[in-house]
Every structure is written in structure tokens, then in C-alpha cells.
Image 1 (cartoon, rainbow, N blue to C red):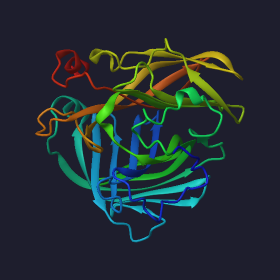
Image 2: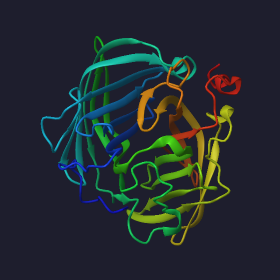
Image 3: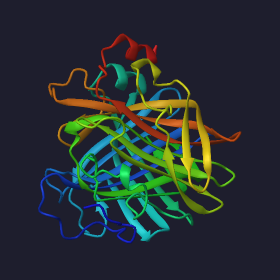
Length: 353
């Protein structure tokens, strides 16, 4: 059943005996000045949850992208560790450390989105990034928030608990023979989720965040599920003047990836709130696109399904976004998909020409 995990920052030490149960930690960030963005994901492999799975990428300028996936046992039950990627909770609710030391594969975003699963060149990558925040944690399963939209039967993606927090990261990334990037107070969002993960009913979704220099920010997670009409489940929140506000995505909003040729098209999301009223957030520029293939029931790799021998699969796309809210520009991340799309559709391929 959905419940709050806001005070349960550390990994579960006693694993539930339930098929496809998982636990996942994600960090997204975007350094607009350097045009460098990333999604770092550490999750339990749902087929054997005692094993941690690293699934991460770093998008660099000029179409380059570094992608990584590996599996491993953690020697410390309070630390998520795949062997080359390690996540430590330094101070619950305030500070986390992300450390990587190992091989990573370099591809191009165009190749990943059009050529499917191939092999790129592996080079060493090292980083140590520290996430810090004083902002409130958004608890997607907090009591009293739009109960009519929190349909556990429709939520196939860790429905038992999901929290997110905006903050900032600092640290250094060193790739290959010395290519380095120094990040300082870069806007970032982290999440932690638990529950059954089974993508077989996936239809479409929006998972996103935005952070603005003046202090405002927002979270959104909403799903369309096979067997349910319209938006099956989802919630959203905004932080204004340090206070967390429940908000709701309007039914006639933009943002859904409804056509394969619209991957980089600007859009406007419309929200309403009992405390903030009605407002709009515009995606004025979508930068980069890294595809994440979903292999059923609940595994991933960085690619579109083209060329795969696995037939029961689809994909979603990870993108960095420049947002505008009441004239103020900010940045963030969005993940979207549509199970009806084909990666060989000329309209899809035209996004990368």
C-alpha cells in the first residue's frame, strides 16, 4: 500500500519477499552554462533485489553522451553500491554523496536514438558529487493530496513510496585522459522510491522537475496506463517562498509526447492549485535526448529498441529543459514516452537530422 518513506532514506535492510519489488534512487542535474546534464540511477534489480543496478548517463556538449550499466552486491546494507557506482546518505534529508570509479561507454545521442543497441568505446570515468538541500521533501504519497488521482492499481512504477527533493550538487567529473568538469551549486533533483515495478501496462508518462534562480521549483509525476482512460494516476507540487504547495496538472495541458516528431517541440504545462491558483510553466527549449529502453517487466538499457532481439519492450526519453515561469527562466529534467511509437518511424528519425 502507498505510504510515506520520507523518514526512510537508507536502503531497506530486510527485503520483501514479493515478485518484482524494487527500490530506486535517482539524481538529475543540469549545468546550463557548461551544457552538461545527467541522470544517475541506482536501483535494485527486481529479479534479484539483493543486487544493485547502476543505470546512469552524462550528456556532454556536441551530441556526446556517456552511458553506464552494471550490477553488483553492496558490502554495506546501508549503502547502495553496484561496485563502480556508490550512493551514500550522509545526512538524511540534507546531504547525499554519489561516487563513480570505473569504465563508461561513449556514444552519440543521435546514434542511441536512431541506431539502437550497439557497442561504443569504453574509457575510465571518476566523479564525486555531493547533493545538498535545505528545501522541503515532496512526498508523493502524503495523505490528503488528490486522492482521486492516486490510483495504486494504475501505478506500475514503485507505488509504495516516492519522495523527491530539489537542491544543488558540487564536485568534479574526470573522463578519459583528463577531460574534466567542475560543478559548483548546480541545480539538481533527487528521488527515492519503492514498490512493485512492472512496465507491461505502460502507455505514456511525464516525470519532470524545474528549478528557478528566484527560489521557485516544481515536481511532476503522472502516468497513462493500459486499461485506464486519460491520466490514470499522478501528482505534482511546487515550492514557492520555501513552502510546498500541492498542484494539479490540467487535463488540457501540453507536455505529453503525443507525436513522434514533437520530441524537441516547446510546450506549455498548465497547473491549478488551491493555494497558488492557476499558472503555466513553459518548456521553451528541450536540450539533449537520451533514450532509455524498457524491457518487460522491469529492466532497462540506454537505447531505442531498434535491432534488439527482445520484442516486448518500449522506450522513454530523458531530456534537459529550459523552463519559463512568469518570465523567469530556469532549468530541469523531463522524462516522457509513448508506447505507440516506433523507433524506425521517419517522423521519429527526423528529430535527429
